[in-house]
Image 1 (cartoon, rainbow, N blue to C red):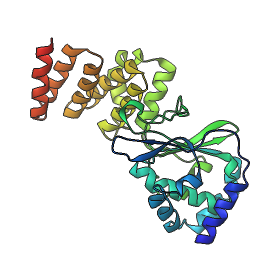
Image 2 (cartoon, rainbow, N blue to C red):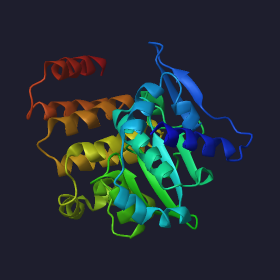
Image 3 (cartoon, one colour):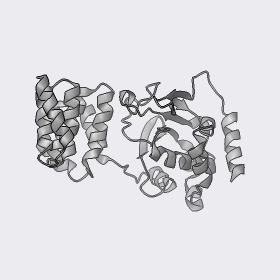
Image 4 (tube, helix red, strand yellow):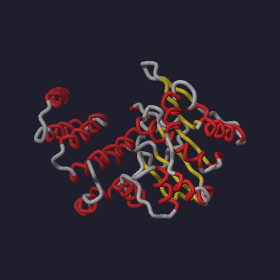
Length: 294
């Protein structure tokens, strides 16, 4: 197993390097380190990241028959990994993915790994802005490209195992997690934000079959909001209420954003609606404070 790791490190070292800043480290108020922007395998094997990366890399044993099936076809693709060194899902899945790349002898000059941040101000954004336009709402996200075009992606976690999901992607027989977000992102990009409110009733019928919980679109809206796309985020949160009309958190999420944009009256109304479905003394206090501010 260690021989495999050393071989993989050797492959990385022999890949040509370019004058670009890699492995930028940031620290939160507690002094905890995380990475942002483009990163590499070597950095993930240093303290403190090796505490989870090296352990999970070494312990993962991909299915040999699947590796054999995907080994040749993998070489025609380029891949981008978006991850968070603060994210539990990334800590679990990214080392496994790297192990599969090693087992398939994937050329590392066809791989780009980007770390995104987890704080509110830069929520799931990278210092280099590499996430822009790619609908990165959950991490890790593994995006497969062929001839410069996205073919498919694995979002947050595999449906079976990573290597089996890759096999399905290569055979063009794969639908990623969070279909509701993919659909909503397509609507915004092709039809515009106003289309959501103008067609909410019809959209509810479509989204009911693909939305597993209110948190799918809720997280997506948060990512957009903290990326400066406040209008889009608020329209999605309003639609999420229509989709999940009896979920208190749907109303609270919208109200929180309305407060931030100083739409206090509508925020109060949304908070009050949440109390019809779940008692919450903190929300009661928040409502009283907002009423005093009017």
